[in-house]
Length: 111
Length: 120
Image (cartoon, rainbow over all chains, first blue to last red; front, side):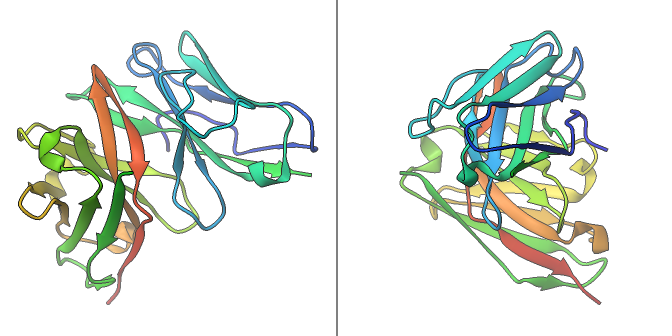
């Protein structure tokens, strides 16, 4: 059972805007920044969003992140077929000397 | 560009120790950042294992801490992971990763991953 809660699946059609949510608690999302990782089929994950809403160089601005309280969201606008992947939220948890925690992942299907 | 490459024996027997090495190129691990490991059982999600700084500071997943040993070899620019007393539940793709830690930590760069199977 993951510390952060994500819906197992999401879907959209090309061009649509989809949102993936991530829920946590006061010891993790409520106190720290949220990051999102994209895992394309058969590949290693890749950092997509850091510090709640910052994009590493090379990540299209179609991807955006936000955080409010103990929840966070990843939005993908202008959905493309190559966005079909698993998306994981992650953050730092202050309990037990501190450690990274992940969500269970959301599988995004582009219809 | 930072690159990380995992290596080690792909099979280990139950109750033995799984040993992995990650070779880093494009950055000297003695210059900073935290270096660590994440794993992903087949068909499942990501589980963070822990990270270590060249100063010796280490952070660990509380559920794995008692069985995990992390280390850095700055002379070889490598990080290592040992997981003791393995069971079938330790079968996973293991990723090494560079973490940025400043108040909190996040994973910046991932290795390509390597599958390690506990097999009797």
